[in-house]
Length: 148
Image 1 (tube, rainbow, N blue to C red):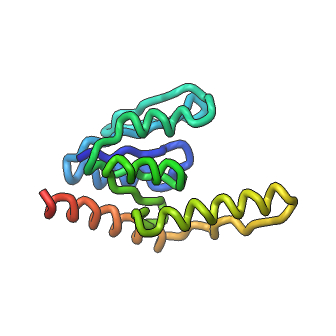
Image 2: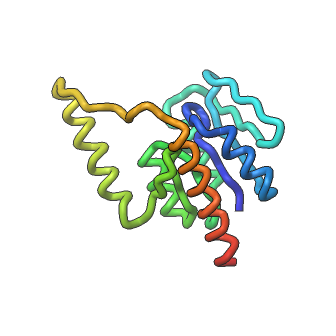
C-alpha cells in the first residue's frame, strides 16, 4: 500500500504526511510545475503544467490497495477502477456506490455554469474538517491492514 496525493490544491498534505510517516507507508505527492511542494518524508513528483498531467501520473502510479487522495471525481473514478481506495480532503470516501452520482452532479453543475448559472462552492474549512479527514484516513489504512 502507498498513499498518492493529488497535491496541487490539497489542504491536508501535512496531515497525510504525518499519518504516512507514523504507519511507515510510502507517500507520493504529485504536483505540476506551477506549485512548489516540499516534504521531508514524501516523494514529490513534479509533472508538466499541461492539463491532466498530474491525474495521468497518479493513475500510472496507482495499484490495487493504494489510497488516492483527491478532490477530483474523475480521478477518483479511475482510481477505483484500478482497485484502489480513494478519499477527498473532507474525509469522504469515494466508492463504487457513490462515484456515479458524484460524476453526474459534476456534469450537471458544469452545464449550469456554462449556461451562466451560479453554483455555491464548498464551505470554508475548519479544524473539525481536518480531524474528520485524519480519522477517515486512519480508518482506510486500518481497513486495508485488516483485509491483508
